[in-house]
Amino acid sequence: MEFFLSHGWRVLGCSRGATEVRNDRYEHHELDVADETAVCTFFGEVRDRYARVDALINNAGIGLSSLALANPSAEVDRLLRTNLVGTMLMCREAARVMVAQRSGRIVNIASVAVPLRMQGSSVYSASKAAVVQYSKVLARELAPFNITCNVVAPSLVAMTGLLDDLKKEALAKYLDGLTIKRLATPQDVAHAVSFFVDEASGYVTGQVLYLGLAD
Image (tube, rainbow, N blue to C red; front, side, top):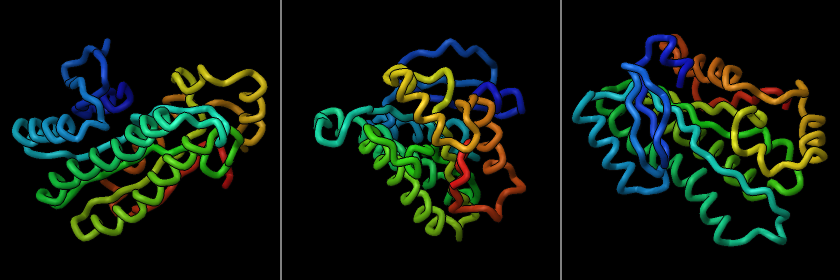
């Protein structure tokens, strides 16, 4: 969010907890993107206060590192609710505002875990593959309204909790599978997202941009 604040955007962010970000152009909302009522309420407030949504960036996500035969169903449900259903709810409510204004940019965050197909990532990869397919279909549905929908799929990002569950050996194997053999930075992701939300990128939709990997 700091990237977009520094480039003059007014940013409305949300998470399940509080934030330490302090900026006159930043507004924080505490909500769970998997909670349909909370998401609808949030966008109702946005519509009433600002009357428009220029761009939506869906980067909420949780991970699950577990072999397919050992995946606990409760954790699978929790992951899919956040990574897939949460993305769909946010897209649906934002798109309703964007359709009315006949413009908008949607960027969903997926992962290079999809093409890498590494052991232990079956549920996480499946959730992000679903996000990719959902985004491609959504791009077609929203194109008549001058709304684009694209996907940025980074490698693991430094400074995120998804690294906490990885052992050194697994991380080394993960990096070896990348074309650019390092973790992504928040700046890497922000620059890619900024291309898709740029006003001049209105002829680009339904695309998946992998970071750090030549797919």
